[in-house]
Image (tube, rainbow, N blue to C red):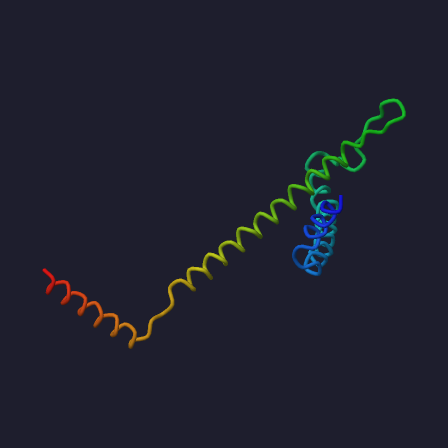
Length: 132
């Protein structure tokens, strides 16, 4: 049992806790922004396009249970918007990281280095000819 807790502690404390906490806080704030966009802008537009329907009020009753399928539709739209934004963000980040890595791989050579490499290649050519 002690080994389990030590492994769990190592797993739970892996990485930077402050970065994780900041990510969670920013994620929560981002979720509120997306919820506001969906609730206050997107869903009213859908309602107008569909004849004035207010999705948050769509529901039906079975016995004493109220099934709020309109709220479910709003949450699906929230999920789709959040997923789209995260996907777009990751695509942009991957383009920047690919560009940065390609810039790192091909450094600009100075004229001196280019001349020295040319001399090296000429000398290699001469030594190979001498061997033949």
